[in-house]
Image (cartoon, rainbow, N blue to C red; front, top):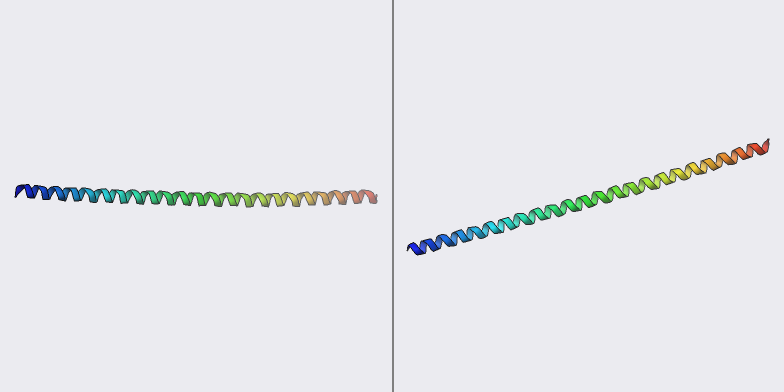
Length: 85
């Protein structure tokens, strides 16, 4: 009877040990999933920053073209005024 009781207790401990292992594995999967989500979020933010940077570059280039055109118009106007003299 004592042997059976001891064997029963060993089975219970083994079962408890397996449950702890499964719970630990489950927690590790949750942490890994959370880590992957953070990586994706970070990548998403990096893409947004890059896109914003590209938009700013295009806007800056557009402004430079406008300034260049304005400069050329001033030159033409000045040349026109000189020719009138």
